[in-house]
Image (cartoon, rainbow, N blue to C red; front, side):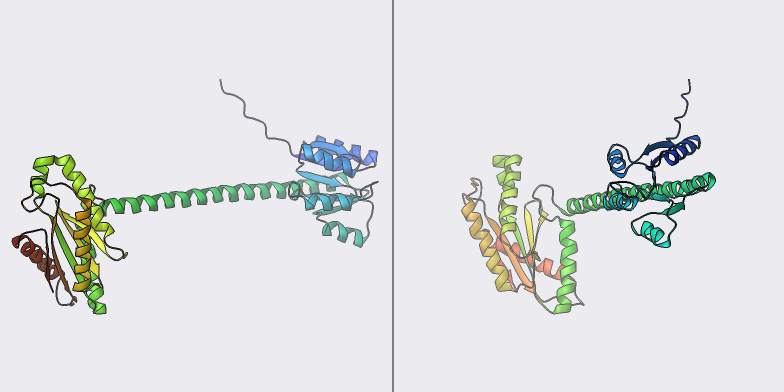
Length: 335
């Protein structure tokens, strides 16, 4: 069974007039027109009535005891609660100054008594039509604002998601250091920048000594924990935002140090070596120590536009090889 559609709500008109015949006539004609009408005979009662229910339109007499129509309208317009309610003055006063004052206090129209019913109805309908349009605009503006707010929230969430995704794409899952992909991008970026600025670029390659033996002795869970400890140590050994620490491969790490010469890079390598000794990570199956140690290769040069960053990478890799060849647990520099 289909339910009947709800009838549209009648627009509410408040009539304020201390002359009973005028009040009754206005109530009667507006009610017959289909409006929900309420009448009061003084301003104070009208203001009190509007605390219970806001009218869509007010018809307001000027000459009333205690509080005249100008005062009532002025009070309506001073309140945020009633500011937007249109007020039509109906008065026997036909002086220009009265009409000017009526509009000055916030009235939207002025009807002179004795009034014609057709004129009153036409002016009432005109103001209510404007009021309906005003509400529609307010509702549309509110919906638009909500849509804009929702879109902004959605865009911010999307941006955050993209940033998080970008971080995940560039991070090594185990150590939370930059991964090989991010390292390659960053090395190329800094190579080009420092070639333009004619400044040095240093690289440190690190390898945990006898890490396969460590995994075989302590297990892969302990091996992963060791990798995390070493990676955190290396990360905390650099302070500048421009320095990048990455996991290069299994137990290998690499540091990109822009605007750093060979002395500065060697100082960082020494900080890493001493820091690892302080961690005191046992390694009973190491051929050179009872603790976890690192071999490191360090190199530095000023990039040239007609060369590639692979030059620096190859040199650092060779320096690491020489550190291992010379007995591990040491740093070898080229540059």
